[in-house]
Image: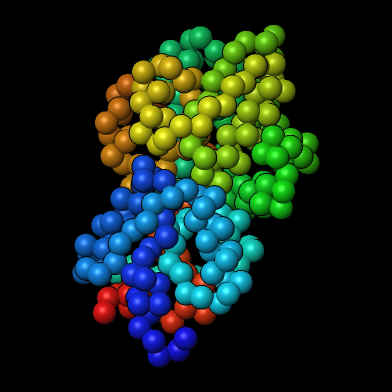
Length: 267
Ligand code: PBE
C-alpha cells in the first residue's frame, strides 16, 4: 500500500533462487553495497521464485526477486529492474559455451556445432515462453528447431552426421538454460548423437566439464555472474565463446512497486 515502508511490506526479504547461482552472490553483495542491513536473501529455486512472483502479482503485493534476461517473466508480467548505481550486479553479460578438453579430437562434429551455436535473447525467450505455457522442454525445443531451420543450419552447415555417438550436456535448471540446453540437444540429436542432458548445481556443472565427466555446457554467464566458477577451472576446459550476447542480471520488481533503485530499499 502506498506510503507504507516498502521493506516491511516484503518482510525485508529478497526472493531468490538456488544458492549456487551467480545472481545470488551478486544479491548478497548488493545487500552489503547498499547497507540493506535489515534485509535477507531467501534461496529457493527458479520455479519457486517465479511462482512467488506470479502469486504476488495476482495479489498486487510487493516483491523483490533475483531476476535476469533472457527470461519469459518479462513477457508475462510488467516488471522493472531496480537501478544499480553501485554496480553490484555488473554490466551486460554474455553466455558462453564451454567444452571439455579433448572434445574437439573425440567428437569433432559435435564440437563444431557447439562452437557454431549462437542465437539471440529473443529466440531463447520464445522457447522459454513455450515451456512456461506448458510445453515439455524437449517439445518446446523441437518446435523451435523445426521452425527455425535457417538459424539452425548456420550451426550445422557442412558438419558431418554421426551414427549414435554419445554426447553429454550439463546444465542447471534455470529456465534460460533449460531452453538453451534442450535446443542444442535437439540439434545434436538431429546430427546423429545420443544426447544426455543432466541437471546439476552450478559449481558442479563447471567442475564436471573441467574434469571431463561431461562433454560440454552452454550455460556459462561471463564475465561477472560465473566469474568465480570460471576462474577456478579456466585452464581445464575450452571456452568456445559467446552463444548469446546482452544477457543481464539484477533485482527485479513489478512495475507497481514504489522503488526505482536498490537504494530505495534502504530504510
Ligand atoms: N541465472 C541464469 C544464472 C545464470 C543463468 C542468472 C540465474 C546465475 O545467476 O548463475
